[in-house]
Length: 186
Image 1 (spheres, rainbow, N blue to C red):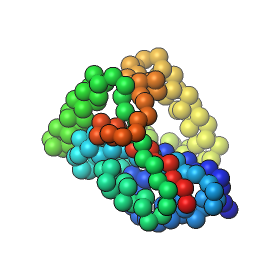
Image 2: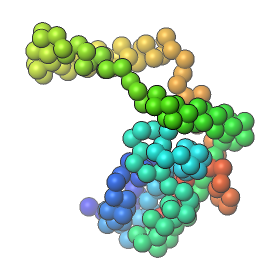
Image 3: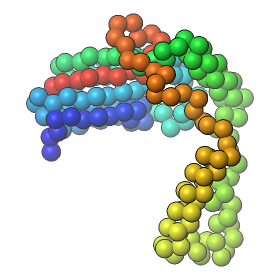
């Protein structure tokens, strides 16, 4: 089908074939439609480090020039904005956090994880057998999600120190934008 509006937030950096993805967005966009596509600014989000020290699922983060170039063949009308911190101190805190993650990457400790609880539990035969019963597996997932949410809400400090109100959209100089946001039309 074709849609009047397409919203793609924080997807492009996860896609191995960006041209195919954007061609599909264009194909499904109505002739007078508008698409909103956002992606991290590699130079700020990850301080230019590749692979991303912030999100190991990111295949390729883009610079502003790369983002504009990948959009160009698919959309005649392109406006790119930036999403940045309102307070420069928050940007400095972000950069310091990313530098720490880069250092962890260099040491090989950034993505090192202990085996997941699920993997450890499934070593027990009774747990593995229970996991094969769909209703038991679904019940455990529900408990795990509720319990995990409760633990996160009540026993840990918040993971993200930023609120939506800490950001602003800007045009013009996008060099300090954490994310790029393109409004595109056929």
